[in-house]
Image (cartoon, rainbow, N blue to C red):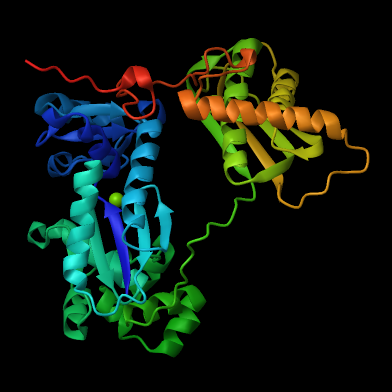
Amino acid sequence: MYALADCNNFFASCERVFRPDLGGRPVIVLSNNDGCTVARSNEAKALGIKMGDPYFKIRDIVERNGVAVFSSNFALYGDMSRRVQEVLRAFSPSVEQYSIDEAFLDLSGMDDIDFDAFAKEVSRACRRLTGIPVSVGVAPTKTLAKIASKLCKQYPRLRGGCYMHRPQDIAKVLRRFPVEDVWGVGRKSARRLSQMNVRTAWDYTQLSEVLVRRTFALPGLRIWQELRGIPSIGFEDVIEPKQSICVSRSFAHEITESAILAEQVANFAVAAVDKLRKQGSLALEIVVFAMTNRFREDVPQTSAGICTVLPEATADHRAIVLAAVDACRRLFRHGFGYKKAGVVITRLVQAEGYTPSLFADGESALREARLSGAIDSINRSFGPGSILFAVQGDGHIAMAREHQSPHYTTLWEDLPKVKVK
Ligand SMILES: [Mg+2]
């Protein structure tokens, strides 16, 4: 058996954890720069607010209904996600984090337990220990577990946990489950399926294996098998390290000064190095890019990128920040307003077992490694951004975040305060 634990309306739920006064009130979370809706509480969904709705278009509904609006607060969501994962790990030794708000649990070997009670217990533990409502579906395959978790959201009487295993129950659910909502069915396949008059997940399972293989190749066949209860999607509790790391943002206001753009690029570089170090890799190449606002026809346009090959594979903050800032200064041109920029570190190799070149300066590499290690441990003890390079400015990325909530769990000064009367 597999379990899927899916946090309900995750970002909106995170905002509510420290704001119990928002219980029952519609809550939405906006994307970077407060652009469009990326999360909605059930009450906000009921008002007809859709995923991806631009904020300016729904401002009316927001004001009329007292919707609580938040800018994205990824420090909070990342930390709450980590807490949920920690709770899940107590229930199974193999947990595969699938996204920021979803994780699969491998339940093999747990054959004689009451899976329905187990699912409800996992959900209750997450709620009690983190404050986040979580839907837990248990089924013989990952794809069916996903469907079971969706049932929990539809039916509150399931109390957050649903065990779906009897063939007749599965058939009943699949007959009402739209095929385009099945995990892994893309928009293109969905169109093709509708032409074939396949409406539900059940219809899909009734196609012949030959036809499925011919029309949708191996990925389609896997989904077909999974829906029929045959596990066909592997379990990856070890995450493969990424092959490149990109940190990029659009800015709230166009940037026209070289020093300010360099400040932003330095912040992106530090964020990228942090990710690089977390996965234990070294980088050989760094690309810095910046562009003007392509939606504005009234201003001159430019877009440029500079690729720098590093002398040695490295995960040192200083080496990568220096290379990024240098590239940024070279690509900057006066007279343009930069709207977006980014840093990509690429050609990654694993730090473990890496052999530096014959001419590498071992001693200075060691010093740099110690410096980066010190930066890591200071930021771990005192919160991210506690120590900065001067070129980072105040360490903030210039985004519109008018409605951002405090970093309740990652900054001392943002700790929630409790008043006792
Ligand atoms: Mg979710």
